[in-house]
Image (cartoon, rainbow, N blue to C red):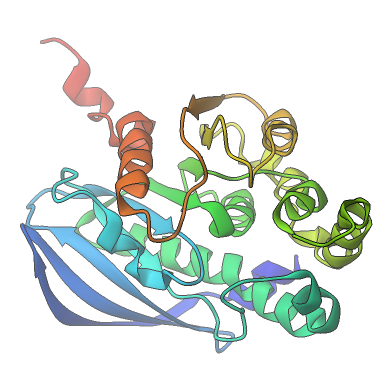
Length: 281
């Protein structure tokens, strides 16, 4: 489809050293595609000799590739890549942005799943990565884009969606402060109508038969339960949803992000020991 044609194929990857975090080396990354797509990001890699599983981890726009900063001090032998969003994507997307600037945002938004997929391609090619164990974990704002990337790119063997939901209009109506209150639903519908192509519930079924894990907050006012359920219902088996007793995720709430990422990393099949290691001699 259109996103695959925007994505092209990886033609160049440059990395530069950007220090260390405990036993992990940090690198800045620049990926270039045959279509002219340029993607920047950050990579965390353990000092390991055997090929490790890898995760593309993305959070909200304001965090960009600094999503790796929210990982626990040690999360095992896993290579993690996080990438930056296109500049044209606003830091917060409100009704006005979507109605008056929708065309520009939509064009830029199509580049996001394409760049996630490019990141996955690069991870799978790396010498220090086990290509059979590349996954994608996304929180909040990144969830629709990660769902599309995973649907179009079978390199992602495992998918974790944290604090995500389907049904954009319901989510937006829960997040706007418009008064009188009865205008929220129609305003949200109007604002999200042009973004229907990104609705994760339209793409999520294509992830199967790869496993899908969803983690959501039970008392999350910003992600109404019925919107979460609409995404889960649209997905096919194998799928799991875990409800945590937390409120909503703030981009700066590193403790909560850590707890959520820990929960995801603890449960992704690709991060459990490889099958060969589990067979008794």
